[in-house]
Image 1 (cartoon, rainbow, N blue to C red):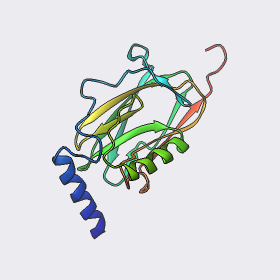
Image 2: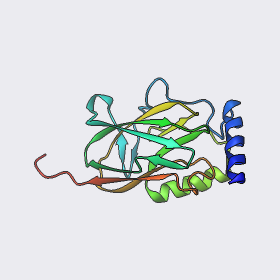
Image 3: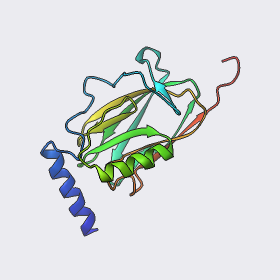
Image 4: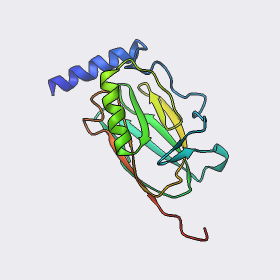
Length: 167
């Protein structure tokens, strides 16, 4: 437990200095990144077509709440993500394979800065949004890829159920 407290304190100090482990001060305060991107799990959503809003909170226990989400294929979801912790967190949507690869890349390049419509980076106490349309049915995920967070279990699941014909 002592090691965890030291990790939390070190991460909080980095976040306070604005050098928060690779992501600078980007908080998407002006709204989600709407650059058009296509991925195996969907594409950038149009805020005018949001079907519903799902609120997710990230915690320093390296868990999300809720950690399991179900959406319907074709739905455009506005994720409002709040960092309820005292350390920097992020939320990245993807396939498990993509998230694992990105987590490994982050370990090797901890100062890497990046921004995409399927991710949000949040200093302590801040919130951000992702607007995403789930075009494919299947099992997908969201995770914090800050080095050590993914490995500690900061991962959630998104089940995209097929839309019924005629909808």
